[in-house]
Length: 215
Ligand code: PRP
Image 1: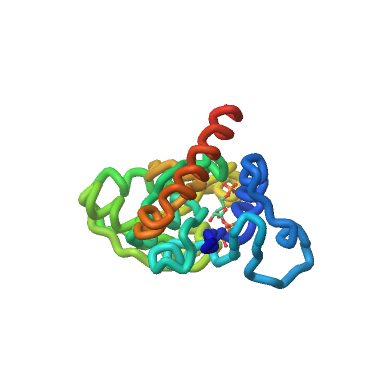
Image 2 (image 1 turned 90 degrees about the vertical axis):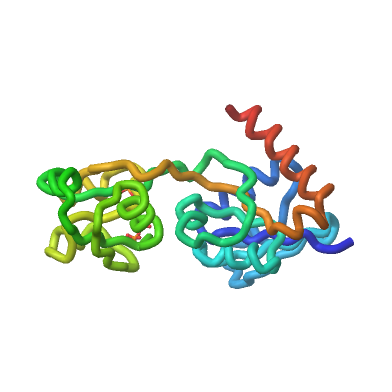
């Protein structure tokens, strides 16, 4: 039997995904070892392979077929824009992509002023301002701690993930616009969905049952 391969976004999403998969009989003992530096894990009995990847790389592994199935946040799916099928919302990892800034920046979003937007997600920011709002902006790509940008005068606003809202609050910033709600999603390689249709369909049906029971 060919391995069915899963690419998981390493960190909290991978852990939550495996907890969910256990409920449908998909487990991987060697992945539970916290000290392991291994990147690939197998369950020989079930013919499954799992690997942990940087979240932004998960859609790439799935698009090229190095993984049949991926678990990744909707933010990454939108930003990467890969040719993959998004087939299920897992309902965890819920947060929001928002335009944030100091309250004083709210006015700038109403007028058609050219403003600077700092973000880790330039494609999402561009789609929001250019395509949806028709506002010309200068997008400044950052790699983290994006909340700093409006505080030090790098940008007027940011486009970033808001979960609890405490990072914003502690830095005197606020949500000015919601771009889109986010959560963890299952993505599938387009060829795998045809070639491994039965196994993937069963996996998704079982998962759906568990998610329904949980809600
Ligand atoms: C994320 C995000 C916000 C923060 C939001 O950053 O970019 O900064 O979490 O969470 P909160 O609303 O619960 O405060 P992350 O911790 O991933 O680090 P980063 O700033 O380096 O991207």
